[in-house]
Image 1 (tube, rainbow, N blue to C red):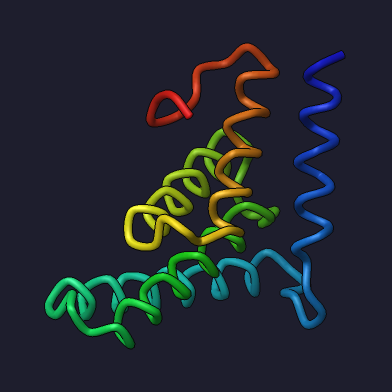
Image 2 (image 1 turned 30 degrees about the vertical axis):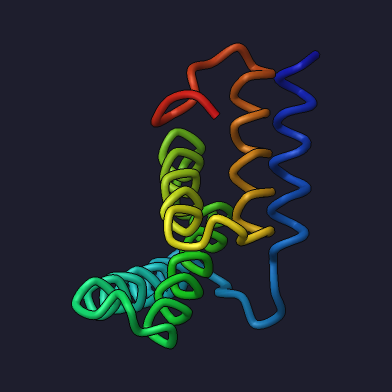
Length: 126
């Protein structure tokens, strides 16, 4: 029964995050993911060049969180790919901004689901 509840929770996350104007096919989805990944990488590089700049920090955190949200709900990736990737990205956000409420909630939910399914949590612990 627990795997069913976990799957249902992940589906609810996806529908809650889905936005208007979302990509309508796999090609659009892949392009959108690549664009968000590029923004995340660029923001990361800029921030780590000057980590004292609060504007760069905010941009980095936002770009990483947005990419994590997209990874979490994309149909372009399978569960074995998207959940560990999303968790890693949420944790990246939390390393930079430990008080990021939404990233903390999403990371905790993914960890809980893995634990409820009796599976090891990617990256360890919780």
